[in-house]
Length: 190
Image 1 (cartoon, rainbow, N blue to C red):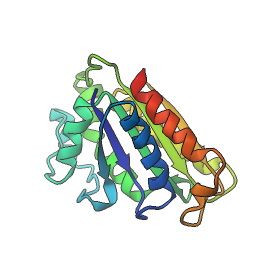
Image 2: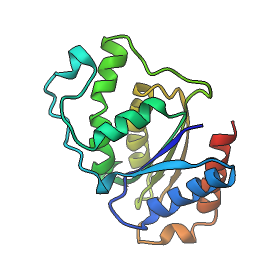
Image 3: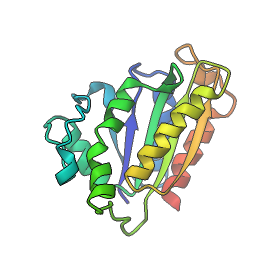
Image 4: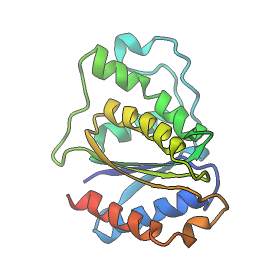
């Protein structure tokens, strides 16, 4: 089973990354490995809406997205983890999602969706926000759902944690780390 993970946090060892590490640990304890993409460290140009992918389903820009496109196409399980900033996914996460416009074109315009493969395709969404209201989670999850739908991941589980702001606050949450660990383990057990 091929598992890929997108960490959309700019903060090294921040709350989102700590939560994600627990999910990856659950995957490892289930006997699987995961390829982790730290989006903040990658060179990804924002989508230019040039329309080139409308005809081919391929992006004309050559950067680190090439690695991501290949990984998405062959993945059975995909984890997307992002902090919530201003009621939205992080810029690092959003730039990667926007560059999946070429996959959207391939799926919907050219009628060539990504095949589900032997294990099917499932996802896990991890969101962490400092605010106490869930509007940011709702907005971020709406974007993530569109991403998962575009890359042919028909179902995903969402874990979100609010009021987690200062670096390391996720460690104080009574269930977050255990929830993420169990969700990672379950994701590859199904």
